[in-house]
Image (cartoon, rainbow, N blue to C red; front, side):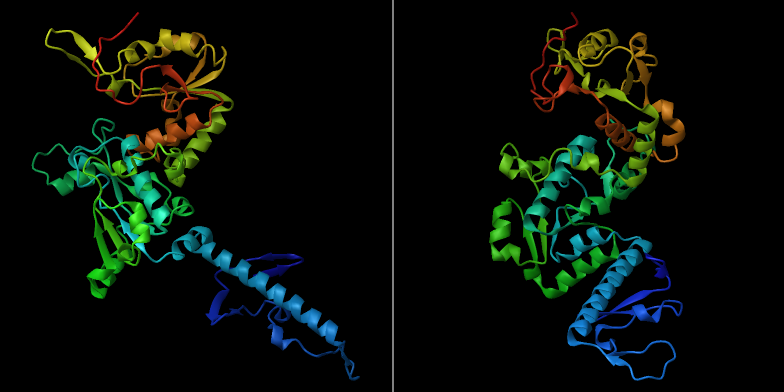
Amino acid sequence: MRANGDVLTAAPRDMWLHRTGCVVTICAPRWLSRSLLLPPMAIPYRITGGHSRRSPLPLSTARALLAAVVTGVVLSIICVLSLTDSLSYLGFQPRSLDKRESSRKYLYWGARIDCPGKHCGSCAGLGHQESSLRCALEEALFLDRIFVMPSRMCLSSVHNTKGTLDSSNATSDQRWGTSSSAMESLYDIDLISKNVPVILDNPKSWYGIVSRSTKLGEGDVAHVQGVSRDELKDNPLYSDALLINRTASPLAWFMECKDRTKRSSVMLPYTFLPTMPARKLRDAANEMKEILGDYDAIHVRRGDLLKNRKDRFGVERSLHPHLDRDTRPEFIKKRIARWIPKGRTLFIASNERTPGFFAPLSDRYKLAYSSNFSSILKPVIENNYQLFMVERLIMQGARTFVKTMKEFDNDLALCDDPKKNTKVWEEPVYT
């Protein structure tokens, strides 16, 4: 740490901290003023001035005590600044590190989201998997445990066309490897850990935890299924265990949080994971937002939701009878006119693949798409999950955001059909 007037700047490579009991000592380079390194007990009782040989004047007890306090405060500040700078230099964020260090017990739900279960092989979409992941994170937060997060997320072929093996001879592990994405490429683990302490299930530290729990005996690993989180917290049989290994509902992980309708049970909001993308994705979104300036946004989900089937009489039926009509340009224009004035910049995020599909909106709005920012996105986007996570950040930053269908009562939406699958097939409406 160099002294420059009244400003202290850190030099992490030249300074190291050593802890001995409760005392922190500093080993500093030669160029650091020795006057800053005097420990509180090394404050001299006499002060000499210049080169005079006269006997030094004794300090009063009050002045000596004040000098000791001031020196102690200065050393404390130096220690804190040095520790923070050293951690930052090494790539650690002190807050997230402390959060994980505060707990030494772990919660494990499995190596893959929603596995074992009906979605283990088929792979659900991003929103579905985020709901399951949020449920597991909530339980870790409730139990004050470190959550051991799966190191990869499955990429659904319905929502992603990249990274799919064509070879029918590929093993399940090979197919999983190419149809999944590293969790760190999707989410900022350190950012999540500021709220819920998290480690991934691939580091050596995790395998060390498993080995340790095995050596300590079966009592240190609690295998649970169908046990409420309240019991996990209150029953010493579970609360004292080093590791809780939960087998979640085979329907989906988020079924363990089926009481989310009760406000008191919701510990993490729906928007938690959507605000936690990896830094490179956040940086790309911020750069795009700067270019867009003051803008509005709409999310037009069509492709995967426009699933019709014929009944036994040959009549077309749909789970969302108004969706196809309400997400066409002519209807979108009428719908959003009340919320978004003419002449505004309109960012459109959609899975519609027909070229020029939204062109009719250009006579009223200045249209923008992710494809307009290929120079920003191409270096960082590897799959459609990452692309949607960036688009989601763009939509969250819009002055006015219109969703495809409502998720909450106050949402603006293009279509009034319920988003939740009602399993009622109706005739599509186009008028």
